[in-house]
Image (tube, rainbow, N blue to C red; front, side):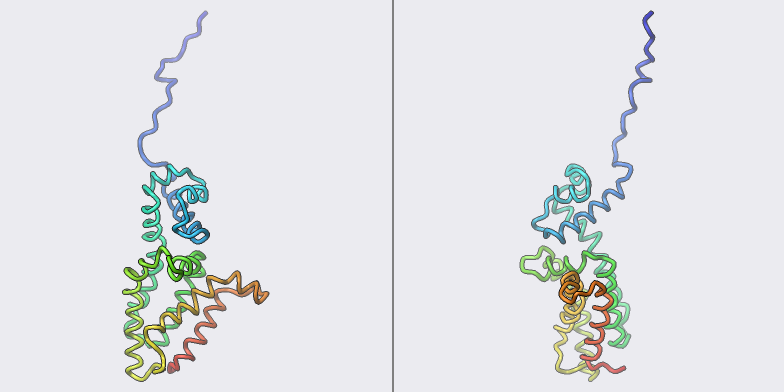
Length: 223
């Protein structure tokens, strides 16, 4: 006796409705983090979508789906990973217009070292893509970040010098450069310094304490 088949409607699987994967938010965030890791390891210019896809354990097609192309992905990384970090620093500085310079610099160094501690990609990416010749983020610094941070601090340093509260031998334009050199540079090279000085305990907190000791005493700021 021939067995009866169920109606076709009962055997056909329902079609997946168009739309993004159910874990879209998490996978997109992981892709941004993977891109950052690749940028630090390989450099932005040398990183391909396939490199990022491999690091994120997704397909290149999925990255195209989320971001479009490599340039759009880079802009997403800048907008969603880098800019919030710099906005945090900018808002800190703009929020202390009347604070003593000693407090401003202390909190600025604390903020830079805190960010380097929380985001292990920040310092090496700064060195590779901003400071190094040909870095892909140099224009970002000059056009979008420097006017909001460097200008504020340089003006404040100049005002303190004019009021006799800051070492007159210092250049207000280069003081910010000095602070960055005392924080982000040693943080970026931490694995090297640990090897050189045979000290696994050396950490960003040590960078912070050292930078504050040099900056606050070298500037001859009043207590």
